[in-house]
Image (cartoon, rainbow, N blue to C red):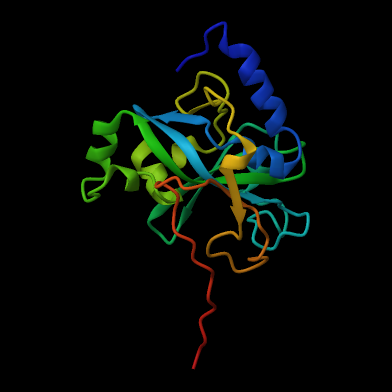
Length: 210
């Protein structure tokens, strides 16, 4: 999936979109192709996070740290983090430099490298579940800490490419983000309606200590 002459204009448009407002950038990632580790996934579900702009669910809400530094831009780079002591998740950095916004890649359809993805996730019975959820998506693609800070729109090991055909507005659904502890009712999760690879919605339920 290296760049060929016909790709440059489309990739330049994607770069401009990612550098703009957060929510259009998030919607624009739907249908894009993400390639890593011999596998290509078509992105079917994303979540937007606004950083320090009043979004308590964002990793950058309290300011810059060594962990979230890449979120502060420029756009088009990867923010990869480890969660629950066992899973990697990947975000695409968006917005103007210094704003710290990013889009979590929640789910996708494996469109190339199916055998490789199956080998990485041997317990999965259905192909639609191989990259259904942010941790599963990273597992299927072989993405880990080494992908942190990589540029997605060049010819690096993790590459993002625009959709072959634009995704119609009518095909995009929106709703609350999954499992966040703050601002959980913001409709900042976007997905391809009726796509079987989209993850199940679960609202965060605070634990009540006795």
